[in-house]
Amino acid sequence: MMDADTFTRAFLGTYFLLIGLHYTSTSLGLSSRTGISHIHYGARFSATWWYRHLFNLFRASILGICLARIAFPIDPWLGVFTPLYQPAVLLTGVVLLLVSFCVIDYVHAYMHQDWRTGINPDSNSTLLTEGPFGWSRNPLFIGILTGQIGLFLALPSWFTLVCLIVGTLVIILQARAEERTLRQRHGDSYTHYARRVRRWF
Image 1 (cartoon, rainbow, N blue to C red):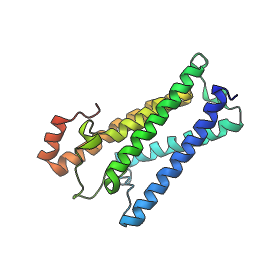
Image 2: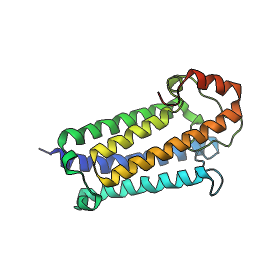
Image 3: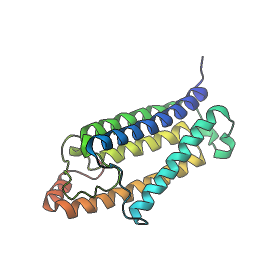
Image 4: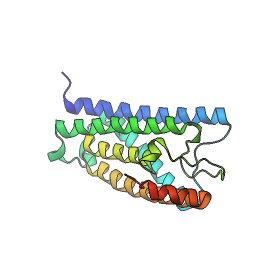
């Protein structure tokens, strides 16, 4: 019978590989249908441009490390927190990662062609205020943050702690940048929406 350690190693490698493939396929499919890119970095060397590149760097590192852990004993290099490396903690992390996937996938499906990563340069973009956006102004980011907490618990270490701290900071800064753009673009409509719905919960 597979123990929690072996299962979690295999799960993390598979999970992040499939997330990468899913995200890439979704972006390519939407771009093929709409004729526009749904990935926006912002102006070169702008704050959002750096946020995006930093996020991509950590995402690639997480994928590489999770895949490497399946075959190689690299945990000592990651600074694993032994007291936390317990089956209950690891499996809680797995559950949170699955919850994260469901939330992100649901929000993507709800947004459909309105989905963008980064700040949409289209001044005629739709302001979504219902569905998941009726209980949070940033439901997609909440899903991502849930996944980052899940990763830390599924692999409690200095590496994933840094990923969690940096990832949370980048998401908070990105959320504020996107909200500034929405406020400028939609004016009173966004102001009324922001009064009705909290930024996070």
